[in-house]
Length: 283
Ligand SMILES: Cc1cc2nc3c(=O)[nH]c(=O)nc-3n(C[C@H](O)[C@H](O)[C@H](O)COP(=O)(O)OP(=O)(O)OC[C@H]3O[C@@H](n4cnc5c(N)ncnc54)[C@H](O)[C@@H]3O)c2cc1C
Image (cartoon, rainbow, N blue to C red):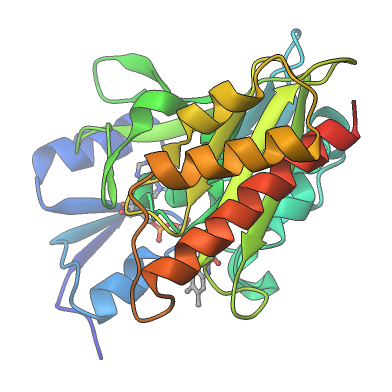
């Protein structure tokens, strides 16, 4: 299928992009185009105008701040994260998780900002951001604000961004230990279920545990009862099993043509167990 007709404009600065969004309420940002363009071709989206932000300078860097926070520009591609030495140093395990996103061709065009704004519950970045407890910086013509990961995902394909705002940066805190597991039919497919968990990267009982679940739920979400079951404990098999039971009880898991409700519950249970054991193994 082909998309409905649309106008196209390339923005050269964040301010110019925001002005374009303000002047046309049906305009949409395009970054890598790896989600928006398929949606347009399927006539699930029909923006009047695409505002191409891919040439805006200053949004493509990966750096670690003075406190170690990993700062990733909105236009950084999945592939750039995958191959970044800074990411390898500050966020061990993150690059392995990112390799679950689609295929190399898509990873070389798709951006972290685009993935988070698209907010597909089966995508990897929303689960990772939520598990890290990171934040995003967004900007419109008059103001800049920070949205915490906990407040970003508000519904099915819906975020807290206003239509005139551009996501400019993603921050992930340093000093976190990550465990990530996903079940997909084939490598590169969207996950039938995916779970990421982090805790403070210190010796001893697991502290400040965060567990995020995607794929088997309509909206990427934290499993807070599972987190409570693990907090301050060792990640041993008994604790992992308790957390998995809690997650399945508390989450609104959904089944569909790709996996029944019973199957999805089963794999969420298994994945939560595995991430807790993985966090625990590094104690
Ligand atoms: C065959 C295929 C398989 C895929 N498999 C996976 C997968 O397994 N896992 C996965 O996570 N993803 C997958 N994707 C999606 C891919 O990762 C996309 O790159 C990503 O979801 C969107 O990034 P993008 O830069 O292409 O965004 P775009 O498609 O350009 O934009 C997506 C949405 O975000 C908005 N947007 C983009 N950038 C910004 C910004 N800076 N500020 C505000 N709004 C913005 C756009 O307006 C649009 O609504 C797949 C895509 C394809 C085509």
